[in-house]
Picture 1 (cartoon, one colour):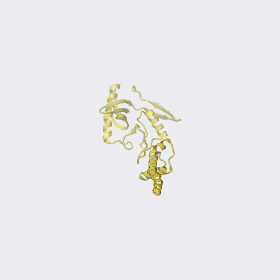
Picture 2 (spheres, helix red, strand yellow):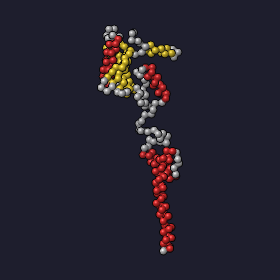
Picture 3 (spheres, one colour):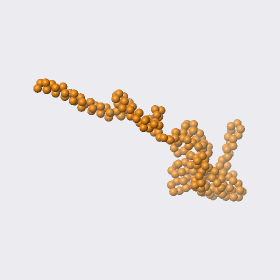
Picture 4 (spheres, helix red, strand yellow):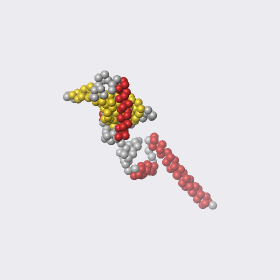
Length: 224
């Protein structure tokens, strides 16, 4: 009996250790995300598990690398953001042209940017027809406001921007029925949900570059 009791005394702590050890490990694993969040180090076993999981994720998604920022999502074919130099050039062009003359930055991404319409500037027939209709509305507004008699001829080019619908920046030609003079116009037309509104229309300003790197902008006023 004495030997059995002694054996029981010896076995009980060992059984308790076996029950406590998994519980302790489980608690450590549950605490791991919190420890990482507050910057506390993980024990070697948890650190090894984390590294193994990271390696498995990289193997499953081969386009991820150590150089990628963990805070940024990355998808195949995703465009890079515009560089600071590109952003500066873009904003300069928008300010100078009113959004009608901007470079093609389609190799990069920026939310709400004014984009060129068409593939390499070539607008398909369906879009050109729609833009022609908007141009006719715009030139009608111009004729009414300025007491002129211009007739729409053709769309030259167009840019587009997503803004509660679509904002079109249309450059087109129109002919003065009185003098047969052809002018280039620029119209800003907003196609919202269920409506189309001509925001503005003007004769395209003429930019003249003089020697000595001096730019002279001559804007055609409405009265001219």
